[in-house]
Image: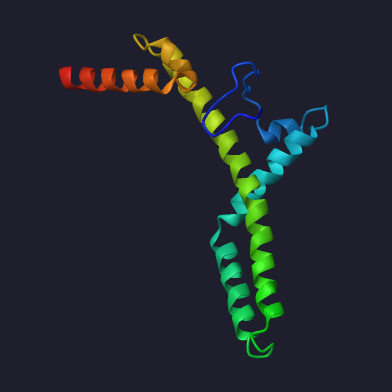
Length: 149
């Protein structure tokens, strides 16, 4: 089962400090999974630009302007509905892949900070794997400690 947003599968080895650029210089060819992640990262970077927003707006404006020419027909409506549905469907997976990767990298960085900080509670490293009751108890303890300082 794939790990969800902000969680790590405890049985899966952690990512090391390799980046997509260091993978590309490796003698071992990138796996299909690595290529998919790199592609998803590129798509989400591209999708988040003002140029992409402008292009999407232009598509809608052109589509709307063509409405009278096509008599606002069912086919005319189906074109925009189908196009936007397909793009949305594919973008969900690209964005989720990039978010999972980013959240996992952030979690690893935070884990390193916890390990390196004297007096930090190392048990918090795996906080995302605890029950909701345990997480809420830790949150209450933090709030109590914050009030003591």
